[in-house]
Length: 339
Image (tube, one colour):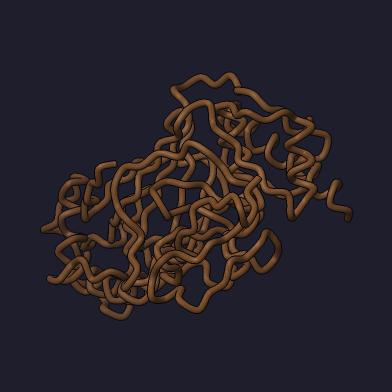
């Protein structure tokens, strides 16, 4: 496939994502086959029913959600900052996308031996970067094996294809200062740097929630930044209480099991299966077998977020975020930033 064909295919995929969001269709994958026959990218805004688009990142879940009209229309697996280089928490906004960016090592000890990297497959920023705080970006990465872990120096990494679709989606929904023809040209190139200014700022919330209730399941995540010194169990109980769950009916053994698994990797259990059965005095082997079945079923989707789809359930989460105050060439330096 040529670069121009790749750019056209990516544009069509973006159009399919937007069409899905606007129609509020049920959750389904947005594979390349779904995009055939859809019109390619066009600059400018898309008429939407709601008040626009926003992003939500839960750090310990390694999950970035795209929310349009109060529905989650896409989810992406990410890599976040290592414990020594934490991804900042709080409310931010994205105002521009830089395509095929240069990377300038920041003035930091870890980058002392790094060199300026031009656009290309070895660039730590990947194909596109979205600035949300000085020197901090959501960006593509050549190190896609790091996704689903705390591996960066503070930035939020995404698969390159995911970062491209996300940036195009933001440009399409809020509008951008680039024509259809030029955007296709930028997509077809891996070396042409172009900064695209969004017509409106896109809100981004970065939070640190170790437990969530979603679609009637409890999900527990590793405490990668050690923000819960008393352990995740108290956080989980608080989340259950705020969701209206009768915590007196919670089975302590099952709760301990999901919390222990969640300390290592994302884990989940259906709320109904977390509660004591009225017949709990029955056969303990049958009780344990039922628990194992419910945990396997709930965990099947806990560790790797779906790439797209609507969120049809409420979400209650724990550990509130800490709020914070809010073509380039070697001779035309842009921000450096984390990797």
